[in-house]
Image 1: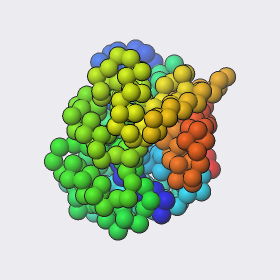
Image 2 (image 1 turned 90 degrees about the vertical axis):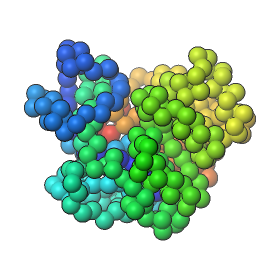
Image 3 (image 1 turned 45 degrees about the vertical axis):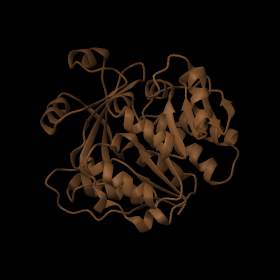
Image 4 (image 1 turned 30 degrees about the vertical axis):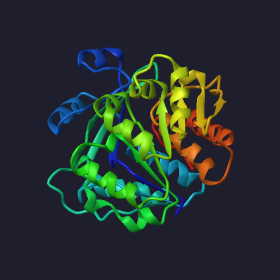
Length: 310
């Protein structure tokens, strides 16, 4: 198997809203907020659903990799309920092997409300459900050992059981990539993420805001110096400034695509990571990998949702 992803198994519920909805509900645009099931259901009552998809950040990347012809798998915790069954079916339809035996859990399968404002930005409200309760017993070490790269998401990292699950997976892997996921995650887990980036990860994916927050700098030049110092591959998306990869002291850039009919930025980073990893695992150059990531990302932002049609 080329790549095994471990991430939050979350069913995405996509809705269009106006700016007022964001303000009225005290949400910060373009970020992710964790809520309990009651608050989640209350918000959902007022909304019109556009689409429901088996989502989660790493799962989106893994589906993109599958669509590009790679043999891939995924581990994510769901409950044996209606959403859990939909989730598993959604992955199977995309030729992703699901290395998780679901059972009836005390908490239901996780859900994420993706609110799209007229400017195409997405604001996420997540009820993690059982996804956030992943533990070391949920990690299939044979699947980890048989994959060339393990791909993790910052959203999943948390003190206690999820941390143990991460550690078990990392200790069995050949190579590890991780996405920092969200500014909220970085600020919540800064010392732990910094330790992972410096000492445990072979590839780190981040956007400009996340990586600058992680290392507490205001200047992008300092990010480049940091990456050169730790001598790891760090891949950074910079919005309309394109993407940059710093690899063993070399800085490679790829411009953003222009004249796009942007509908929704959901999944842009996920599909970018999937495209980059496709290039990397198939022995393409770093520049070519950046180009594939940019291509995938530019396609997904021109549709609603985080999944491309095959």
